[in-house]
Amino acid sequence: MLRTLNELFRSLFDASPEDEASSEHLLRLATAVLLVEVMRSDSQVLAEEREAVLEALRDKFALNDDEVARLFELAQTEANEATDLHRFTSRINKGFSAEQKLRVIELLWRVALADDHLSAHENHLMRRLGDLLYIPHADYIAAKQRARDALNAQAAP
Image (cartoon, rainbow, N blue to C red):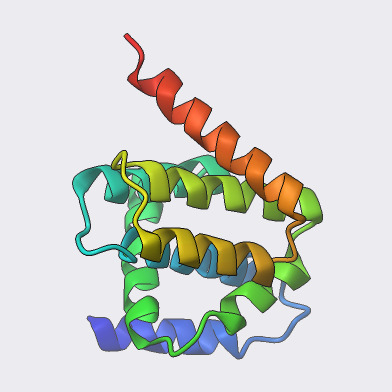
């Protein structure tokens, strides 16, 4: 099964830039890989973090549960094989507007903050992703605060 997923990813990654459906899929996959990387950047992957990734994918791309599950599985496979983040962040930089990239950063913060603990590794990765996505520092901090506020609102009775 992993081989099939890898073959699918490879064929989509090598697709023509004119193929809009493939391009959209690659943007989704690149975003999902970054979410997975943040999820697993601390010492353990908790259910809250996993659910935050799944919710971010549902929210950002309006996918149904089956599509989210397949994208999440593919993103995990790709994240395991990735040697760097550049190919994913460059795809996002090319395909998303500044506002869309800022929304991605906010979703990444929701994953990082989902377990109510921000490890040094998570913080470092988030800073790096903010830089790789060319997010101005003030916008980066505002996205972090919006993510924190959204999580606090969810936790409130």
